[in-house]
Image (cartoon, rainbow, N blue to C red):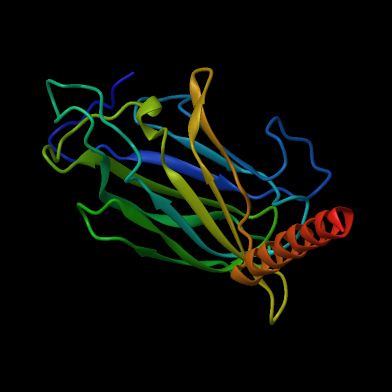
Length: 212
């Protein structure tokens, strides 16, 4: 299904919903599911609870550099989608009335997103945006072309703990979905390498002892 554009931009409407642990939802925990339920030009993005936690989302970034356009008559085949502009965003559900958002990302760039305050579990944030390609500012993208989008979320759990979650959208049936998982901190990799080194050293010592 192509996005139909008139003389003015027809942006894709997106809904973001963070659900509390234990609330019933179709997607697996920690996932973002994108669907195109209609009407034309309408997207729905459902953000499930991050591994059942209750962190506050501070930033959500969409990196389109891994996407590929497929309509060779309207784009350069294989070129990535770009951010074509936004119709703005608002919290559709914010019981504490403390949610704010700030859009970042220039028109024509492959990266865009929002900085947030007060984006707590169960809050719902909606926004609209226009997916284009660099060679055609009026490109009508299809949902499947969002596959390859890297979605990254910065989630604060305390004054000193902010974790990064990331996932890449892939095609699931007629939709696209991304499962966000925690990104290990650099010190985690260092500890892993140190542990592997110790295991290797211990194995070497055993072989040396057996050869004596």
